[in-house]
Amino acid sequence: MNRENFDFLRENMQKEAICALTKKPVVTYSSERVRLWSEICEEVKDIENQPLKLGNALKAFLSRVSIPVSENDILIGRMVEESFNEDEEKAFREKYITPLMKNEGIPKFFFDAGHQSFLWKDIIEKGLPALKAEAEKSLKIYTEQGCEEKCSFLRGAIMIYESIICFIERSAEAAEAKGLLDSAKACREAASGAPQTLHAAFQLVWSIEYIF
Image (cartoon, rainbow, N blue to C red):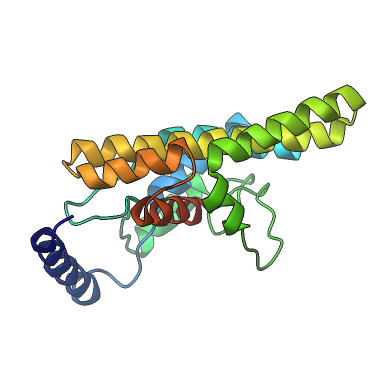
């Protein structure tokens, strides 16, 4: 990205930030995500194994969730937002916050273990495909040993790696459709292996945190 393009993006991002601070409603909802989780909770409700339930749920979610892109974006990763009045919010909650979901609109099978951090060093230096390969290698070992609990965990982890890679590849397609070729390239780099550029490294970190 040359200096002229960077200055243009910076000016537009400043305008967008000011607009968000002065005109955007104070309360907005990531309503599409809640609708999707409501559907997916019903789809996976009969899967009793927690890692496999989580893996299947994220696979479904990350293959369906919208990836809105602004012409000002450098990193790809926004969500669809809506504003509701009191009556609209009540109707929305009654329809989509099912007994399978928490009050904040996420599945009950998402357990909160408190403050967490990822092993970013491995994620950046190895990349998602290599971490997936490590999980597959471990799965083969524990399958031979008959350790079903560890195998279930690893199968779920492999599905999650695959789902995140798929989501970042979808982000690349969304960026390309908007003409953001540098951002699309960074997404493809982040999805295909260890990032070799700062742009791709930031995109990988942002995609994981965005999902999390």
